[in-house]
Amino acid sequence: MRPAVFATSCLGLLAACEPSAKVDPVTVQWMDWPAEVKAGQPFRTRLVVWNVCALNPQFRAGASANQSAVTFAPYFLIDNHEIECLTERTQTLLVVLAIDTAGIAPGLAAASARTYAIRAPTLSVAYSTLAQDLPVSTFGEVVVRPSGADTSRRNAAGYVNVERDSLNCARVRPMGLYAPKAALVLEDQADTAGLSAAFVNGYIHTVTVPVCGETRVFHRVTPG
Image (tube, rainbow, N blue to C red; front, side, top):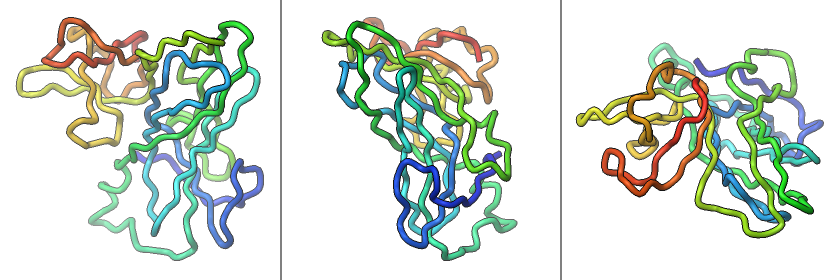
């Protein structure tokens, strides 16, 4: 089910709103980001967020940082023109579609190697109809180094479903994404317990021995 989203004023948001635009906050279903980054260098974070029912919505990642964490507070700017979206015929489809997009995290300070938390609003905390700001959860962390950051691995976390293809290969798919290449091969093919509609943590990396014919795989770190 798509979490409740609601129009708010532009007060308190990180980016200025266009005249007559409404703000529709959304939750993050999935994120992946570099496991290590160089101090002061902005980095790209993949965000899978719920869709909105609107004409020409404009996505904003809402990224900010403080001394301990990077927080994404994504939202869409939408115009005031109402459209008929949630009909009896289309309602089921609309509430399960997600958008695969990205946001840029600001550069982070680090005199020596240190970690920052990566945070965003999630499905589990989004069932509210009045709050202007969705509460956030921690997805994982990023290591910031003055130099020598290893960019080969991406940390990843979010809500997934597990699926198997015709060769019985297990993959995890970010919830709400249906593109053929959206699913990631699970490195440990036996570790599928509790993966249906579950929040999982792990990382994406390259293996020397292919799994299900692929070398870029998802390694699960904690159970869902």
